[in-house]
Each structure stands twice: as C-alpha cells, then as structure tokens.
Image 1 (cartoon, rainbow, N blue to C red):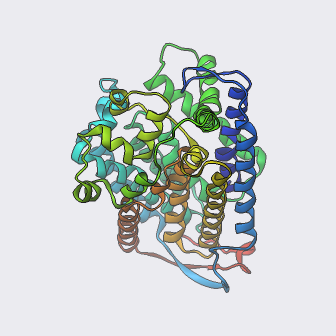
Image 2: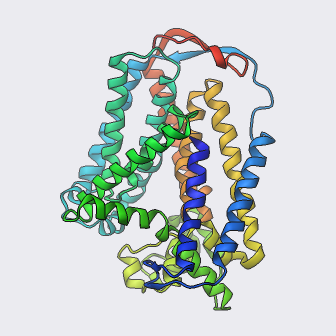
Image 3: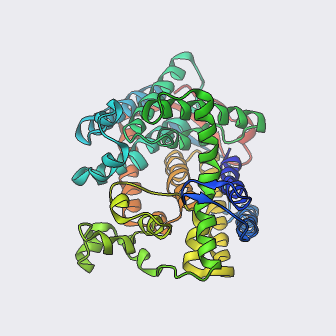
Length: 425
C-alpha cells in the first residue's frame, strides 16, 4: 500500500501540470494554461524523488541493522478496543462541542470560517486530528494484525474506524476523514495487490463523493461531483506548481523563502521572539508558507485570512526556495524522507513494535504526505509535531497499561514472519 500511496501523491500533480500546460483551465489561477516547460521540470522532479525513495529503501536507510526472531507480548485486543473507542469518543465530543464542529456538520459555519475561528482550541483540535485520534486507531490496527480474528473483534475495529471518521467530519474538508484512517489502512494492508489497491481507491472516491454532497454541492449529481473530484485530484494539484514555474521562467520576483523556516519553533514562540502576530496579517503571511504561496498566485490578504488556500506541492516550494535546477535538492530530500519512513514502518510492523509502527505510520500519512502534497517543509519538524508525537506516545503507553496483556505471545522477526502464530487477544 505504501508505494501506491507514494506514487499517487507524487504523480497525480504531474498529470495536472501536463493538462494545464496543454491549455486546460487552471481553477486555482483563474485562467487557462499554456506551454511553459513546467511538465518537463515537474517530470524530472518526480523521477528524482521516486529514484531516491527507491535507493533509500534498497539501501535500508533508517532500517534496523539486525532483527533476530523473538517473541513479543500482545495487548488484550478487546480491552484495548474499548479503551481507544472511549478516548476517541471524548475527542469527538471536544471537536463537536468544544471546537464547534457540530455547526460545520449542520452547515451553519463554513469550513474556512471554522478553521480560522478556533482560537485557543486550535492547537488541541489539530493535535486530536493529526496525531491523537489517528495514532490511537493505528495502534489498535497493528495489534489486530497479530491476533486471531473473530466477528466481535472485527466489529470493535469497525466501530473505532467509524468514531475516527466522525472526528474528521468536524473540519468539513472532503479529505480529512480519509486522512485520519490512512495510517491504519496502511498498516492493515501493508502488502496488497494492485487490484485491491484500486478497489480502495474506488471506495475512497465514494467516501469523498458523499462528504462533498454533505458539505459542498448537495444539489449536484454523483457524475458531476466525480468529475470535479477528478479535476481536484489532478488539475488542482498541479495548476499552482505550473503557475509558480511560470513566474520563475518569466523572471518575476518571488518572495524570500528563508523567513518561512523560522516558524518551525511554533507560532506562539515565534510571535514572542519576533513580535509579529497574526493580527498583523500582512507581515504574518511572509513567515507562513501556505499563506505566502496563496498570496503569490494572486489571492488578496482578506480572502487568505478568511480561509482561502491552494495546493502547491513541494515542487512549488523548491522553485521559490532554490529555483532551477536547485529544486532537485528538495526532490532528493523528499525521496529520502519517504524511503526512510517506509523502512521504519516495515521494520516496526514486522518486529511487533506496536507503538513505533503506529507513530511512524501516522507521521508518514499526515505530516510527510501533507508536505509532499502541499509544501511547507516545517510541517516535518515544527514544535507542534514533536509535541503531538510525544503526547501520542504517552497516550499509547497509558492505553497499553490499561488494556493489559492477552497472556499470549507472538513470534516476530524477519525469519519468523512467514509463519507467525496468532494470539488470542
């Protein structure tokens, strides 16, 4: 599953760039495209990124040097499932009533307005969505791969998937629900055929269509919505990259890049050190990549402050930062990050390191995926990431202790993986 996800997130914008360069209308830019060489540059970026991802995997960068067969204790799955469900149910109530997500679901508050009006609840809402809820579900999922299946356990796992999905709905974005489930799906279907991966893609399209009808265009038919989603997954993934390359090719002035790295310390600490606050939005934009990119391609500050955003990919970020051919340094780094993530997740799943598998899978599917898809390299190492990962680890340890152990052990390690005995959790 990992390689299918990586190829999709890297290559789908390439199709969008090619379509825009061949004259298709670019919705993010508000005008049709034309030939400017962006397709060739983006293709080289994709090729280099995937090549270095393959090299990292082949050379086992980040992988354990040696893992010998051994046995590990497995948490009691049933108890763990109830504990994770209860915690995520609490998080759901926090999102619905504390953060105001219920008003988004009812259609009384627009998703952009919800995102910009979270205030003091913003950090907690993001941590719940990006770290706590999906990591808890991923931990339950990796434990489920080491137990004997039963209808009851399947129902408990499904119930936990459902509660996590509801947490994602609070944001009103079509992809958030799927994003929260992706770390768990990656673990459960680590090895998967192309046909099954395609089936999951179709299921994802159905889920996106349903959420789109709920939050965006309820009066349109499924065919029209699917057409829009296809455009969103390709053209609107690549049109901003095409636009940034066009600005660079025409030698238009691009904004300084280094200031956006300073917010890796976290917005509050950044404001404390620099004296720049969000209420001074004109300056704030210069230090936040997503805002800076949206402003660069023509959106006014008032619309950006109200929640308008665009998707740029790391190619856009690289061109702004280093131009050409310097953008290939980002391609190389992106490939290495993806390859190292693959090795860490694979080792953790195979070696029965449940907490590491859950956290590393979540890190790839949310921060790394978001960076590859939209740019903003600080998302990989901002203070918020370390707090989210640290707190998630603490939560998982508490869940592990509360659930207790099943009384059975399972053999793990590279030699024993082909014939792992199941355990009754």
